[in-house]
Length: 467
Image (tube, rainbow, N blue to C red):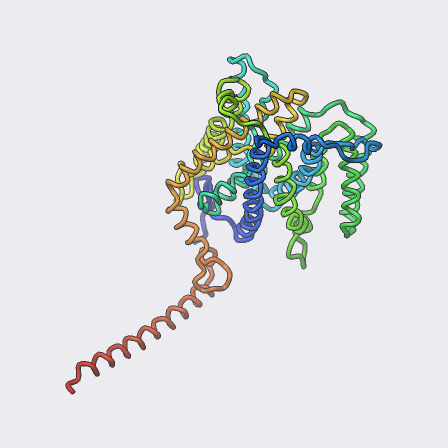
């Protein structure tokens, strides 16, 4: 009898990942988790340093200028961290986005609809919350984009600290959300935070990108070719007035992220594997070190909840993110007739949506861009990002801890490999060879137990025999 075609109701949301996708997600999140812990440490160091008796040294280092002035690159350390080091972060984000589009969760439009809509709602609702608070509170609307970003590294650091390991489907959902989130953050920065454009420099940057693309298509190899070219492209993009991190994204998107015959990894995945530790372990923590240092006091914390700009950021991250992502997910699943994975429940989705309210790195960057020239308000916005992210982390931690036993059981089941062939058993349920191997294993165990039973019986009989 021929198999019936799947109906729309057969599609599962947060269903099992393919084995290659699961391995990619695991490797990517492992690096991001380590980077997230370093990010957390850097943020704490920045806060302590900026509030210590020797806090003047923090601002001295932060405002120290270095670089070739003739090339327009005489920048402060804080500027180098935000415009230079974060270009590496966005380069990795560009590769992630390209891979998701051609080989990951976003390659199938039907499957991509749910995380994309969830991410869009998870950015639109926080912006709306911020706007409403500031319209009714007579505050500035310039910071509407601050609460729209999710920091995947910081979110994973929170998971590591509280000791919760999410099932792979939830981890993939969180990562896909963050990738789409990064895409729209890039567009926001490019469209809304571009200063006066120097078309000569911008034309030079585009010419450099064209050369970069051509060299890739000609299969030219060697870091000594691409690194100097990337630096030239970055410098031209910075001087054009377009935010320099856009150069990193553009180069990341140009890399090939599909494998060809004889390749174990695509060039994009290989380069991402090399650069991700630099991004997660060096670039982002250093950015946090020189951006998260704000004065914290009882009065400053109280001001976060009383001023419309800072209150809008906090409510956007804590309420807007959770409501937007959960609402977008539920409505999309409802109207596309996609059913939730039976191993999970909607409270799990809400917990992950709350975790996405941790908007550290990109939120800090957008805060600096939105209120450039107003140092006092910039620091207040940074404080609100820290407070909002902390509240979101606490709420998510409580919600995730309530289901931690369920998650642990699912993770154990996902990783179980009884035949010890390196492939989790859940991926071999339809493989006859797997069942034959398991049968042989059970037969050996049965024979071993029969022998033990025989020996135990013989020993008992000998003990019962009269002397």
